[in-house]
Amino acid sequence: MGEYSWVYALIGTILGIVLSYVAFLRNTKRDSNDEGRETGQVLTELGYIKGGIDDLKQEQRRQQETNIELITRLTSVEASAKQAHKRIDRLEGREERE
Image (cartoon, rainbow, N blue to C red):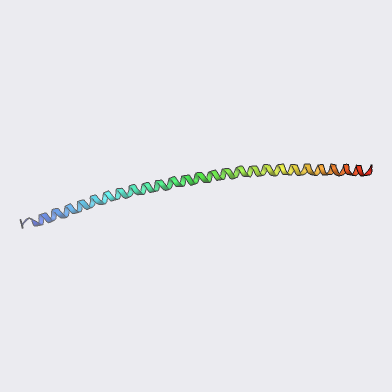
């Protein structure tokens, strides 16, 4: 059995190398799957964030439109009030003269 001990050592070494390589491939695949899962989660979360930002932009546009409408209406009301004050001032001037 002493003559073949180097054969057993060689077989053990080759078997160790093969098993190490198989374990390496398995861990690489697992790491790749984990990395893919994490990347997918990050992309999903970024999608939610993008959607939220889009909603905020849309709401901001609606608010700007509302503000423009209110400013337009306020300008109209101010012009109308100015005309009303002129008419009131004219009427008061007539009453004082009479």
